[in-house]
Length: 386
Image (spheres, rainbow, N blue to C red):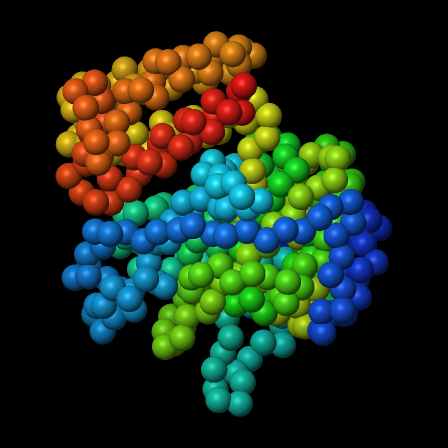
Protein backbone atom coordinates (compact mmCIF):
# COMPACT_ATOMS: atom_id res chain seq x y z
CA UNK A 1 0.00 0.00 0.00
CA UNK A 2 1.19 3.51 -0.70
CA UNK A 3 2.61 5.46 2.22
CA UNK A 4 -0.03 7.98 3.29
CA UNK A 5 -0.35 10.57 6.05
CA UNK A 6 -1.82 9.38 9.34
CA UNK A 7 -4.77 11.75 8.89
CA UNK A 8 -5.70 10.02 5.63
CA UNK A 9 -5.59 6.61 7.35
CA UNK A 10 -7.79 7.86 10.19
CA UNK A 11 -10.26 9.30 7.65
CA UNK A 12 -10.30 6.01 5.76
CA UNK A 13 -10.93 3.92 8.87
CA UNK A 14 -13.63 6.28 10.09
CA UNK A 15 -15.49 6.33 6.79
CA UNK A 16 -15.82 2.55 6.89
CA UNK A 17 -18.19 3.05 9.84
CA UNK A 18 -20.54 4.84 7.48
CA UNK A 19 -20.37 2.40 4.59
CA UNK A 20 -23.84 1.14 3.75
CA UNK A 21 -24.61 -2.49 4.45
CA UNK A 22 -25.65 -2.95 0.84
CA UNK A 23 -22.25 -1.90 -0.44
CA UNK A 24 -20.48 -4.42 1.78
CA UNK A 25 -22.32 -7.39 0.37
CA UNK A 26 -21.07 -9.33 -2.63
CA UNK A 27 -23.31 -8.58 -5.56
CA UNK A 28 -22.30 -10.79 -8.50
CA UNK A 29 -25.88 -11.33 -9.68
CA UNK A 30 -27.11 -7.77 -9.24
CA UNK A 31 -29.29 -8.68 -6.30
CA UNK A 32 -28.86 -5.19 -4.83
CA UNK A 33 -30.18 -2.20 -6.74
CA UNK A 34 -30.72 0.23 -3.90
CA UNK A 35 -31.22 3.96 -3.85
CA UNK A 36 -31.59 5.21 -0.28
CA UNK A 37 -32.95 8.77 -0.08
CA UNK A 38 -32.70 9.01 -3.87
CA UNK A 39 -34.25 7.85 -7.11
CA UNK A 40 -32.64 6.50 -10.28
CA UNK A 41 -33.68 7.66 -13.73
CA UNK A 42 -32.76 6.94 -17.32
CA UNK A 43 -31.62 9.59 -19.77
CA UNK A 44 -30.51 9.87 -23.38
CA UNK A 45 -26.95 10.96 -24.14
CA UNK A 46 -26.66 13.33 -27.10
CA UNK A 47 -23.07 13.34 -28.34
CA UNK A 48 -20.98 14.21 -31.38
CA UNK A 49 -17.62 13.49 -33.00
CA UNK A 50 -15.21 15.93 -34.59
CA UNK A 51 -16.50 16.49 -38.15
CA UNK A 52 -13.04 17.71 -39.19
CA UNK A 53 -10.97 14.88 -37.76
CA UNK A 54 -7.71 14.41 -39.67
CA UNK A 55 -7.41 10.74 -40.62
CA UNK A 56 -3.76 11.23 -41.57
CA UNK A 57 -2.87 12.23 -38.01
CA UNK A 58 -4.01 9.24 -35.99
CA UNK A 59 -2.44 6.85 -33.52
CA UNK A 60 -2.57 3.89 -35.87
CA UNK A 61 -2.57 4.16 -39.70
CA UNK A 62 -4.45 0.86 -40.00
CA UNK A 63 -7.42 2.56 -38.38
CA UNK A 64 -7.57 5.42 -40.91
CA UNK A 65 -11.31 5.01 -41.29
CA UNK A 66 -13.70 7.41 -39.60
CA UNK A 67 -16.00 4.72 -38.20
CA UNK A 68 -13.07 2.75 -36.79
CA UNK A 69 -11.45 5.87 -35.38
CA UNK A 70 -14.53 7.13 -33.48
CA UNK A 71 -14.23 4.88 -30.40
CA UNK A 72 -10.60 5.96 -29.94
CA UNK A 73 -11.08 9.70 -30.49
CA UNK A 74 -12.90 12.57 -28.81
CA UNK A 75 -16.59 12.02 -28.10
CA UNK A 76 -18.24 15.23 -26.96
CA UNK A 77 -21.21 14.98 -24.59
CA UNK A 78 -23.42 17.69 -26.08
CA UNK A 79 -26.49 17.30 -23.85
CA UNK A 80 -28.73 14.88 -22.00
CA UNK A 81 -32.46 14.41 -22.42
CA UNK A 82 -34.72 13.19 -19.62
CA UNK A 83 -38.33 13.75 -18.51
CA UNK A 84 -38.94 15.43 -21.85
CA UNK A 85 -36.28 18.12 -21.43
CA UNK A 86 -32.82 18.51 -22.96
CA UNK A 87 -30.11 19.99 -20.77
CA UNK A 88 -26.81 21.22 -22.23
CA UNK A 89 -25.23 22.83 -19.18
CA UNK A 90 -23.26 20.61 -16.81
CA UNK A 91 -21.11 20.96 -13.74
CA UNK A 92 -17.76 19.22 -13.92
CA UNK A 93 -15.59 17.84 -11.14
CA UNK A 94 -13.35 20.45 -9.53
CA UNK A 95 -11.89 18.43 -6.66
CA UNK A 96 -10.84 14.84 -5.95
CA UNK A 97 -9.51 12.89 -3.00
CA UNK A 98 -8.17 9.34 -3.34
CA UNK A 99 -8.58 7.89 0.15
CA UNK A 100 -7.42 4.33 -0.46
CA UNK A 101 -5.97 2.89 -3.65
CA UNK A 102 -5.44 -0.86 -3.27
CA UNK A 103 -2.37 -2.57 -4.68
CA UNK A 104 -2.39 -6.17 -5.92
CA UNK A 105 0.99 -7.68 -5.09
CA UNK A 106 -0.10 -11.01 -6.60
CA UNK A 107 -0.41 -9.59 -10.10
CA UNK A 108 1.48 -11.55 -12.69
CA UNK A 109 1.14 -13.08 -16.11
CA UNK A 110 -2.01 -15.06 -16.82
CA UNK A 111 -2.10 -18.40 -18.63
CA UNK A 112 -1.42 -16.66 -21.94
CA UNK A 113 1.55 -14.72 -20.58
CA UNK A 114 -0.33 -11.41 -20.49
CA UNK A 115 0.55 -9.15 -17.55
CA UNK A 116 -2.42 -7.04 -16.52
CA UNK A 117 -1.32 -3.54 -15.58
CA UNK A 118 -1.68 -1.22 -13.74
CA UNK A 119 -1.49 -2.88 -10.35
CA UNK A 120 -3.39 -0.11 -8.58
CA UNK A 121 -7.19 -0.13 -8.52
CA UNK A 122 -7.92 3.57 -9.20
CA UNK A 123 -6.58 4.93 -12.50
CA UNK A 124 -7.37 7.36 -15.31
CA UNK A 125 -7.29 6.82 -19.06
CA UNK A 126 -8.41 8.25 -22.38
CA UNK A 127 -9.00 7.27 -25.98
CA UNK A 128 -5.89 6.33 -27.97
CA UNK A 129 -6.44 9.08 -30.52
CA UNK A 130 -7.69 11.87 -28.24
CA UNK A 131 -4.36 13.70 -28.07
CA UNK A 132 -4.43 14.04 -31.87
CA UNK A 133 -8.06 15.20 -31.87
CA UNK A 134 -8.68 18.87 -30.87
CA UNK A 135 -12.46 18.54 -30.57
CA UNK A 136 -12.58 18.25 -26.74
CA UNK A 137 -9.94 18.39 -24.01
CA UNK A 138 -9.13 15.23 -22.10
CA UNK A 139 -7.36 14.14 -18.95
CA UNK A 140 -4.18 12.06 -18.64
CA UNK A 141 -3.38 8.37 -18.44
CA UNK A 142 -2.35 7.93 -14.82
CA UNK A 143 0.54 5.53 -15.40
CA UNK A 144 2.41 2.94 -13.36
CA UNK A 145 1.57 4.20 -9.86
CA UNK A 146 -2.17 4.73 -10.25
CA UNK A 147 -4.13 7.96 -10.32
CA UNK A 148 -3.34 11.11 -8.36
CA UNK A 149 -5.98 13.58 -7.19
CA UNK A 150 -4.96 15.90 -10.05
CA UNK A 151 -5.33 13.04 -12.56
CA UNK A 152 -8.86 12.43 -11.35
CA UNK A 153 -9.91 16.06 -11.67
CA UNK A 154 -8.40 16.29 -15.16
CA UNK A 155 -10.14 13.09 -16.28
CA UNK A 156 -13.58 14.21 -15.09
CA UNK A 157 -13.43 17.97 -15.74
CA UNK A 158 -14.42 17.91 -19.41
CA UNK A 159 -17.13 16.80 -21.84
CA UNK A 160 -14.97 14.10 -23.39
CA UNK A 161 -16.71 10.76 -22.85
CA UNK A 162 -13.48 8.90 -23.67
CA UNK A 163 -11.66 10.62 -20.78
CA UNK A 164 -12.55 8.42 -17.82
CA UNK A 165 -11.60 7.12 -14.40
CA UNK A 166 -11.15 3.39 -14.84
CA UNK A 167 -10.92 1.05 -11.87
CA UNK A 168 -9.36 -2.40 -11.76
CA UNK A 169 -11.07 -5.53 -10.48
CA UNK A 170 -8.90 -5.71 -7.39
CA UNK A 171 -10.97 -4.29 -4.63
CA UNK A 172 -11.62 -6.41 -1.57
CA UNK A 173 -14.76 -7.42 0.27
CA UNK A 174 -13.54 -5.87 3.51
CA UNK A 175 -11.25 -3.01 2.48
CA UNK A 176 -12.45 -1.22 -0.65
CA UNK A 177 -10.55 1.21 -2.81
CA UNK A 178 -12.16 4.59 -2.13
CA UNK A 179 -12.16 7.99 -3.80
CA UNK A 180 -14.23 11.15 -3.60
CA UNK A 181 -15.02 13.70 -6.29
CA UNK A 182 -16.50 17.15 -5.71
CA UNK A 183 -18.43 19.66 -7.81
CA UNK A 184 -18.27 23.45 -7.42
CA UNK A 185 -21.86 23.82 -6.13
CA UNK A 186 -24.34 21.54 -4.40
CA UNK A 187 -26.95 19.83 -6.53
CA UNK A 188 -29.38 16.93 -6.38
CA UNK A 189 -28.97 15.44 -9.86
CA UNK A 190 -26.04 13.36 -11.10
CA UNK A 191 -25.28 11.58 -14.39
CA UNK A 192 -23.20 8.39 -14.55
CA UNK A 193 -21.63 6.78 -17.61
CA UNK A 194 -19.91 3.39 -17.34
CA UNK A 195 -17.60 1.77 -19.86
CA UNK A 196 -18.43 -1.87 -20.52
CA UNK A 197 -21.88 -1.95 -18.84
CA UNK A 198 -20.60 -4.87 -16.78
CA UNK A 199 -19.93 -3.31 -13.39
CA UNK A 200 -21.53 -2.26 -10.13
CA UNK A 201 -21.34 1.30 -8.87
CA UNK A 202 -21.32 1.91 -5.11
CA UNK A 203 -21.91 5.63 -4.54
CA UNK A 204 -22.43 7.67 -1.39
CA UNK A 205 -23.56 11.29 -1.42
CA UNK A 206 -21.92 13.33 1.33
CA UNK A 207 -23.00 16.43 3.23
CA UNK A 208 -20.60 19.24 4.17
CA UNK A 209 -19.38 17.18 7.15
CA UNK A 210 -18.55 14.17 5.01
CA UNK A 211 -21.52 12.14 6.27
CA UNK A 212 -23.56 10.15 3.73
CA UNK A 213 -27.08 11.57 3.32
CA UNK A 214 -27.93 9.20 0.45
CA UNK A 215 -26.36 6.13 -1.11
CA UNK A 216 -26.94 3.95 -4.12
CA UNK A 217 -25.93 0.56 -5.45
CA UNK A 218 -26.20 0.69 -9.24
CA UNK A 219 -26.15 -2.64 -11.04
CA UNK A 220 -24.91 -3.01 -14.60
CA UNK A 221 -28.31 -4.43 -15.55
CA UNK A 222 -29.91 -1.07 -14.75
CA UNK A 223 -27.73 0.88 -17.18
CA UNK A 224 -29.28 2.18 -20.38
CA UNK A 225 -27.17 1.87 -23.56
CA UNK A 226 -25.57 5.28 -24.13
CA UNK A 227 -25.15 4.78 -27.87
CA UNK A 228 -21.36 4.91 -28.14
CA UNK A 229 -18.38 2.63 -27.59
CA UNK A 230 -14.83 3.44 -26.47
CA UNK A 231 -11.45 1.77 -26.16
CA UNK A 232 -9.25 3.23 -23.45
CA UNK A 233 -5.52 3.88 -23.60
CA UNK A 234 -4.23 2.96 -20.15
CA UNK A 235 -0.62 3.89 -20.88
CA UNK A 236 0.67 0.32 -21.00
CA UNK A 237 0.53 -0.38 -24.73
CA UNK A 238 -2.31 -2.83 -24.44
CA UNK A 239 -3.20 -4.39 -27.79
CA UNK A 240 -5.99 -2.53 -29.55
CA UNK A 241 -8.87 -4.95 -29.92
CA UNK A 242 -11.41 -5.08 -32.70
CA UNK A 243 -14.36 -4.52 -30.37
CA UNK A 244 -14.36 -1.35 -28.26
CA UNK A 245 -16.52 -1.51 -25.15
CA UNK A 246 -20.11 -0.30 -25.23
CA UNK A 247 -21.03 2.30 -22.62
CA UNK A 248 -24.15 2.65 -20.49
CA UNK A 249 -25.70 5.41 -18.42
CA UNK A 250 -27.99 6.12 -15.50
CA UNK A 251 -28.94 9.14 -13.42
CA UNK A 252 -29.47 9.59 -9.69
CA UNK A 253 -31.69 12.30 -8.18
CA UNK A 254 -31.51 12.90 -4.44
CA UNK A 255 -34.65 13.27 -2.35
CA UNK A 256 -34.82 16.65 -0.63
CA UNK A 257 -31.06 17.15 -0.23
CA UNK A 258 -28.25 18.63 -2.31
CA UNK A 259 -24.56 17.77 -2.09
CA UNK A 260 -21.26 18.64 -3.74
CA UNK A 261 -19.31 15.46 -3.00
CA UNK A 262 -19.67 11.82 -4.02
CA UNK A 263 -17.73 8.91 -2.54
CA UNK A 264 -17.18 5.88 -4.77
CA UNK A 265 -16.28 2.53 -3.18
CA UNK A 266 -14.73 -0.28 -5.23
CA UNK A 267 -15.08 -3.75 -3.76
CA UNK A 268 -14.54 -7.41 -4.60
CA UNK A 269 -13.75 -8.77 -8.09
CA UNK A 270 -17.45 -9.21 -8.85
CA UNK A 271 -17.63 -5.42 -9.13
CA UNK A 272 -15.64 -5.60 -12.35
CA UNK A 273 -14.10 -2.23 -11.48
CA UNK A 274 -16.62 0.35 -12.67
CA UNK A 275 -15.05 2.63 -15.34
CA UNK A 276 -16.71 5.97 -14.83
CA UNK A 277 -17.54 9.40 -16.14
CA UNK A 278 -19.71 11.48 -13.79
CA UNK A 279 -21.24 14.94 -14.29
CA UNK A 280 -23.83 16.92 -12.35
CA UNK A 281 -26.74 19.20 -13.20
CA UNK A 282 -26.41 22.88 -12.20
CA UNK A 283 -28.93 23.92 -9.59
CA UNK A 284 -29.69 27.41 -8.32
CA UNK A 285 -28.59 30.89 -9.34
CA UNK A 286 -24.96 30.68 -8.26
CA UNK A 287 -24.28 27.65 -10.46
CA UNK A 288 -25.16 29.73 -13.54
CA UNK A 289 -21.59 31.05 -13.31
CA UNK A 290 -20.33 27.55 -14.25
CA UNK A 291 -22.25 27.65 -17.53
CA UNK A 292 -21.05 31.17 -18.34
CA UNK A 293 -17.46 30.14 -17.66
CA UNK A 294 -17.72 27.28 -20.13
CA UNK A 295 -19.42 29.52 -22.71
CA UNK A 296 -16.59 32.05 -22.33
CA UNK A 297 -13.94 29.36 -22.75
CA UNK A 298 -15.63 28.09 -25.91
CA UNK A 299 -15.84 31.59 -27.37
CA UNK A 300 -12.17 32.26 -26.64
CA UNK A 301 -11.24 29.02 -28.41
CA UNK A 302 -13.20 29.80 -31.59
CA UNK A 303 -11.13 30.64 -34.65
CA UNK A 304 -11.08 34.30 -35.68
CA UNK A 305 -13.09 33.56 -38.79
CA UNK A 306 -16.12 32.74 -36.64
CA UNK A 307 -16.51 36.42 -35.74
CA UNK A 308 -18.08 38.97 -38.04
CA UNK A 309 -15.32 41.26 -36.83
CA UNK A 310 -12.37 39.73 -34.94
CA UNK A 311 -12.42 42.66 -32.54
CA UNK A 312 -15.89 41.63 -31.37
CA UNK A 313 -14.53 38.72 -29.36
CA UNK A 314 -13.32 41.07 -26.61
CA UNK A 315 -16.62 42.87 -25.88
CA UNK A 316 -18.44 39.55 -26.02
CA UNK A 317 -16.11 38.12 -23.37
CA UNK A 318 -16.45 41.31 -21.34
CA UNK A 319 -20.24 40.97 -21.26
CA UNK A 320 -19.95 37.39 -20.03
CA UNK A 321 -17.46 38.47 -17.38
CA UNK A 322 -19.77 41.28 -16.25
CA UNK A 323 -22.65 38.85 -15.89
CA UNK A 324 -20.47 36.45 -13.89
CA UNK A 325 -19.40 39.33 -11.66
CA UNK A 326 -23.03 40.25 -11.06
CA UNK A 327 -23.78 36.64 -10.10
CA UNK A 328 -20.86 36.62 -7.64
CA UNK A 329 -22.35 39.72 -6.01
CA UNK A 330 -25.83 38.23 -5.84
CA UNK A 331 -27.23 40.35 -8.66
CA UNK A 332 -29.02 37.53 -10.37
CA UNK A 333 -31.73 39.57 -12.05
CA UNK A 334 -29.19 42.05 -13.36
CA UNK A 335 -27.05 39.28 -14.74
CA UNK A 336 -30.01 37.64 -16.45
CA UNK A 337 -31.02 40.96 -18.01
CA UNK A 338 -27.50 41.58 -19.35
CA UNK A 339 -27.37 38.14 -20.88
CA UNK A 340 -30.88 38.14 -22.31
CA UNK A 341 -30.89 41.67 -23.76
CA UNK A 342 -27.27 42.50 -24.41
CA UNK A 343 -25.63 39.29 -25.43
CA UNK A 344 -27.89 36.53 -26.73
CA UNK A 345 -29.34 38.54 -29.65
CA UNK A 346 -25.83 39.17 -30.95
CA UNK A 347 -24.75 35.54 -31.09
CA UNK A 348 -26.05 34.50 -34.46
CA UNK A 349 -26.64 31.05 -35.84
CA UNK A 350 -24.52 29.75 -38.68
CA UNK A 351 -27.56 28.83 -40.75
CA UNK A 352 -29.10 32.33 -40.60
CA UNK A 353 -26.40 34.94 -39.98
CA UNK A 354 -27.44 38.56 -39.77
CA UNK A 355 -25.57 41.86 -39.84
CA UNK A 356 -26.06 42.26 -36.09
CA UNK A 357 -24.47 38.92 -35.23
CA UNK A 358 -21.15 38.90 -33.44
CA UNK A 359 -20.58 35.24 -34.30
CA UNK A 360 -21.52 34.21 -37.80
CA UNK A 361 -20.43 31.09 -39.64
CA UNK A 362 -17.17 29.43 -38.65
CA UNK A 363 -14.82 28.30 -41.42
CA UNK A 364 -14.44 24.82 -39.91
CA UNK A 365 -17.30 22.47 -39.15
CA UNK A 366 -15.71 21.65 -35.79
CA UNK A 367 -15.94 25.25 -34.59
CA UNK A 368 -19.38 25.66 -36.13
CA UNK A 369 -20.61 22.83 -33.89
CA UNK A 370 -19.81 24.89 -30.81
CA UNK A 371 -22.05 27.85 -31.66
CA UNK A 372 -25.33 26.14 -30.62
CA UNK A 373 -23.62 24.94 -27.43
CA UNK A 374 -22.59 28.50 -26.53
CA UNK A 375 -26.12 29.80 -27.08
CA UNK A 376 -27.64 26.94 -25.10
CA UNK A 377 -25.26 27.42 -22.18
CA UNK A 378 -26.14 31.11 -21.93
CA UNK A 379 -29.87 30.43 -22.30
CA UNK A 380 -29.79 27.81 -19.54
CA UNK A 381 -27.76 30.17 -17.33
CA UNK A 382 -30.54 32.76 -17.73
CA UNK A 383 -33.11 30.13 -16.71
CA UNK A 384 -31.12 29.39 -13.54
CA UNK A 385 -30.83 33.08 -12.71
CA UNK A 386 -34.55 33.69 -13.12
